[in-house]
Image (cartoon, rainbow, N blue to C red):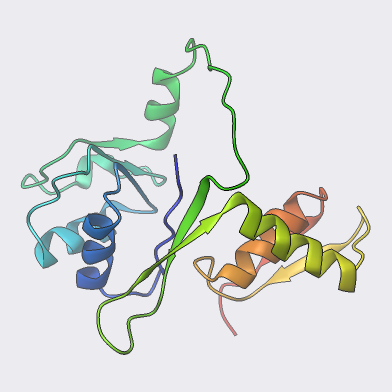
Length: 168
């Protein structure tokens, strides 16, 4: 699977565009309210197969939903006895698609390979040397490439504590 982060404060129509343009198969949302707003922005999602809500409100999904909506804990239970197959990853394989803000038109998907991400990590580690006991303060949007590199890939990869700011 290739992650495609959505900006939490993006418009429902922009998020709907990104879902379809990226051919996303699964959407994770904190509340079904977010999914219901996207449904009002666009009715057709030809690639989407499932919406997983991390909150406890899957029952609040719109009856017009073209795909099933399930709660995260229920979805995870379905895979409890599933054997995971061995996966081989090439450095040039697609690792993520991060969309631009779309300020000059429709958002554009930037395709990042594993090699791209490892190059960013290497450059950052050359300039900063985190210790396992460090704590990171995350304040940029999680859809931002720099934030993903620092807090996800380096901070969490080092086993550091990451504190997420909810606002200024």
